[in-house]
Amino acid sequence: MALDEPEFTIGIEEEYLLVDAETMALAEAPEALMKACQTELQDQVSPEFLNCQIEIGTKVCATIAEARDDLRRLRACIAREAARHGLAPIAASCHPFSRWREQTHTDKDRYNELSTDLAGVVRRMLICGMHVHVAVGAPDRRIDIMNQLSYFLPHLLALSCSSPFWQGHDTGLDSYRLTVFDNLPRTGLPPRMSSFGEYERATGILTELGVIEDASKIWWDLRPSSKYPTIEARICDVQPRMEDALTLAAVTQSLARMLWRLSVKNQRWRIYETFLISENRWRAQRYGVREGLIDFGRGEIVPLEALMDELIALLEEDAAHFDAVDEIARTKEIAASGTSADRQRRVFDAAATSGKDRDGALREVVAHLIEEFHHDL
Image 1 (cartoon, rainbow, N blue to C red):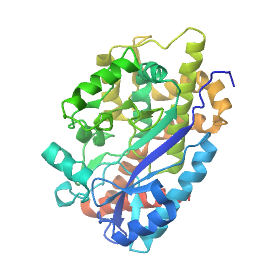
Image 2: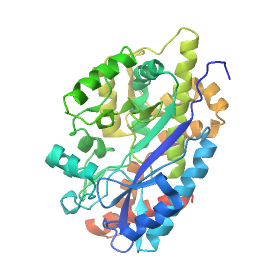
Image 3: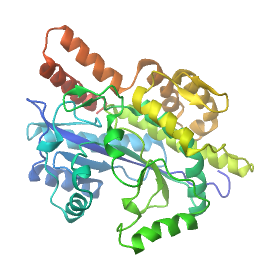
Image 4: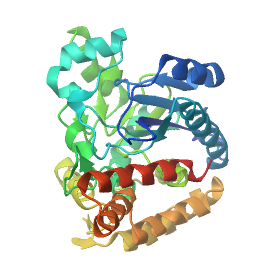
């Protein structure tokens, strides 16, 4: 490790939905379930905005291998305790058929204030995400890496899509979650900042006016964490398969180190206009891995498989440093075989072909998501 190299430790946060194991519909978390999980996992588990949600967070991990052990432990606990109540967790960013109007939010001051402040917009937040923290060191470095890493956010989104269905219908989008989330204020791609001081001044205006409580109410796709010395990538849909979540975390960690390596050589990744990155963000949201992203250097749309070949080569040194070569290589497999959104549609189509009606086919999709959650435990 170079003398001034950041640790690049990571932490993964995931939000899950709880479903009735028989009806496959959303179900509220019983108090006894939350208590049992908190007894075992302490502060690594917490309620989320809606009563049908539960959130976990790994410990600070140096490697993906460490993150795998902790994430498996967390997921296994949630699955085991949910089963005691006839429930099961799914790690998909939207439930295929349950309706947001039928859900209730958690009775905590933070969530009561959100409901009051954001009104009908936040009440539709029947969505779950995955956040990856990476420790990159000094505050100004967080901003510098944030500015450059934004280019890759559409790539991460494309690999992560898990929300094609909304309230019983195929939306035609692979990540409908973002359509819902983007209705909140202070979301989307982060603005370009020149320094951490500029970030603090900008966010400070809103806090001083009482518009927001603190910087945790800024929900950009990538932001400096308000609690930790990290950057926090928030672009991804949550992953039904644990190994896919670990691949996304490995890519995020390795990208941060790659960009730091460039800075040591007095180099940097080219920064494109947010308008252009937004177009790739939309392509990823709409098509997932199917239609490719724009390579602005080449001036052409490039298939995701080819982009992943380039990414694997770009991150070769960093993947080796973190012993995450297999996880980074998995991006090519995801690009080739499809994301959760593709798998969910295949399950729905197979069920419909076998004679099931729409409701029955959607329940098959939820059963598939339950199975994927338990696969790697």
